[in-house]
Amino acid sequence: MAGAIIENMSTKKLVFLGVFIFVLQILSIMIGALIAPSPTSAIRYLATKCINRHRARGWLVPWGSNRCQQVRSFDEPLAKTLDANDIVFAVHVPLPNMEMSPWFQYMLTVLQFDIAFKMINQIEDDVVITIDAGIAYRDDLMSEWTAKFRSVEQRPLRCVFTVPKTYDNEGRFYHCDPIPFMELGTVAHKYFLINLRLPVNDTVNVGIGEIKDIHIVGIHQNGGFTKVWISIKTVFTPWIFVATGWYWHRISLMARPPVLLEKVIFALGISMTFLNVPVEWLSLGFEWTWMLLFEDVQQGIFYSTLFCFWIIFCGEHLMDQSQRNRLSAYWWQVGLVVFGSSVLLIFDLSERGVHLTNPFYSVWASEIGTKVSITFIIVAGISVCLYFLSLCCMVRCVFRNIGGKIQQLPSMPQARRLRYKGIIFRFKFLMLVTLACAAMTVIFFILNQVSEGRWHWGDYTLQVHSAFLTGIYGMWNLYVFTIIFLYAPSHKHNRDKSGDGRPADMMEKPESQNTQLTCGEQGPTETYRITGKVAEE
Image 1 (cartoon, rainbow, N blue to C red):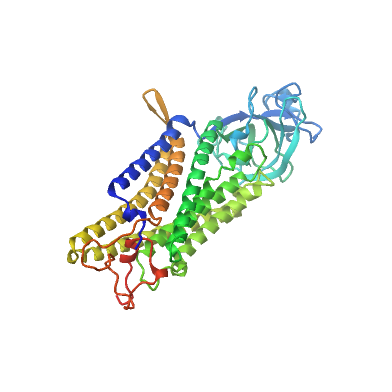
Image 2: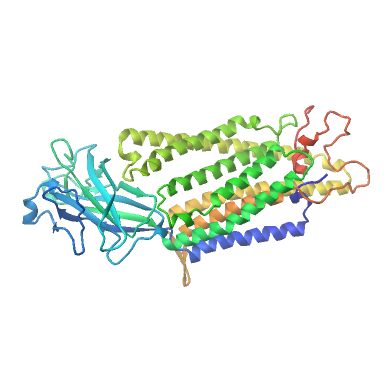
């Protein structure tokens, strides 16, 4: 009977494969640490206070030949003659003598207010600030600005004053939380202009304190990191695609139909290929505002397939023969994964889906939206926790099931006993590698959060954030390739070398017995077959 490559490959070749995979894993980490720059850059812009007495809807530019009439401070005599509605805050992105690039992929902005404390003009509790915002673009310094989006948005203003509110402390500044302002899913133009007003009347923007300045922090992906990232995806795409096609070709050559485990391994390869497709190359030439949403969908499909694979992989090595090879046997585990993924997809569509038509929208802008978003995240988190608890229980049961089979080994001939010891050891090792991959993801995530983003090692600077992203991405590609390769049908045939004339499978019975597996029930590996409990048991 033909088994999988993991059972028939020699130990020497398996060790060579393991070393090869390990070297590639280290290489993917070092590419991010030594070659790629930091994934993102944040640039702080001070908004220019432009005067717009006639309340015109034109675009006001903070610098250049057509710069607006401006005031440096609201304490100037000229500013005393102005109404709050006459002021437009203008920001040119990027800074002078610089250009934006499609290699930046996206641009996020947040607002930071400088608000001075005044006894007669304090910030009220639970106050909401209204912002009349617009963004325009152009691709050279001489052309006119083209409007891209306009919107009137509301944001909660959360500020604290850390010293006593007395006349002696007037002029000190509040500590205000940054406010999400805008998210562009593409950076297809060289120059951007942001104009924003804070309209004031009897009911709008009342109780927001005395605003002195507005800062806008622009965050974009570094072009150098984008080049490294796309290059890695371009390398992995044909590799995983060919491996997946080769795997299914091997499966189709077998006399029996594919079992559920083989189908889900094939689905895992397809989802990894879909995640690898470097559509970012095309986004460099087209203004695709949906790229961030598309990347989230790519990751969601892959991780959902991966979670389902883990459940089915463990379950198929645990269930009775009569229950195997049926997706319905995993209805609640797979349903939990699908439910959690659906919740996160709905949350993503409610934010980035709306950004396709209004980049200033934020689901966190309202109290209801914030509560709904937090609820979605909590529900998804609970689903993930339940999933991992279920997975851990299944892994424990699989190892216990294997332990029961090991007890039968001493009664076998020595040659067959050594063979099955090797098969079980390889299966256990693969399970431990799976758990190690999950653990490495958590460890890298923690290091990414607590580190300062870069470490110094002699004359070299290690980019921890970049190493985290390229390392994890390389790890999952290598893991999927390893699963596809090792669980592909082997061209070798295992024959009984013990000389007793019996089949090599320790759990097989004569064909006349009811416990004999049919062709469709036979699995991809010996471990798959010997760990399944026979119905009578």
